[in-house]
Image 1 (tube, one colour):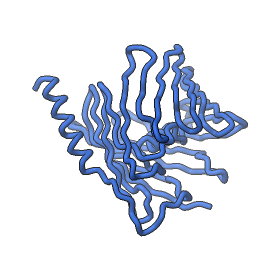
Image 2: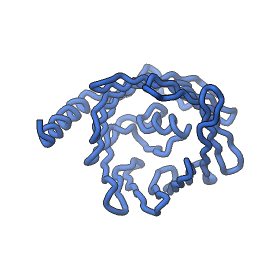
Image 3: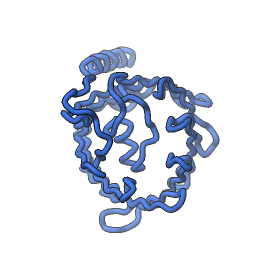
Image 4: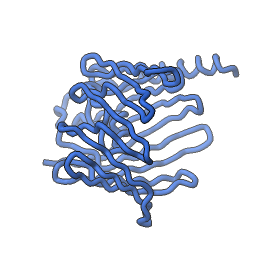
Length: 251
């Protein structure tokens, strides 16, 4: 099978997948903002393996994530717990193996609104700019950058400062408001305990030359996202990602 045919087949699958995506709010109960994610599982199905990851979160009295636990069945991978401490404008993220040994210490700097404007991880710095809560630019240590254009409160395109980075188009479920459990939210929470992309609506897909994702959501009777399914295709492999999400009510 040549590459052009394979790419065409993947696009057909993605288009079919998007057609059946869940797009309806449940009318029984209005969505309440006092639910937060305490756990989600991620099952990644590839042609040669099935990988299970589990993420758990605890919070402080200010509704900030203070621990992120991660267990996995990945071969030669370790289980971790990240401890986040907050001091003035800085977040310190200390990640330890389950036996207590330190794996990494990262630092995140926030602005007055709580948005992360700089990360220092493994000695590498990244900087972020926003328009209100919308991400507008990510700058790398070498001063290359990606910038993002938005429309109606949604990031719609990623544009690079130079060749070597991908241009990516983003699309949304315009009839589904953003909330915990959005695909981007889950992936950012697993790494930072924070979401960089606070769009008005739930992400439906993003399409680039080397990486494409199509997402569907299952909405429960209280308009919480209970499940997420994402079809992920890149230069290396294609995979199906299934997320199951558990919440707790607070306040």
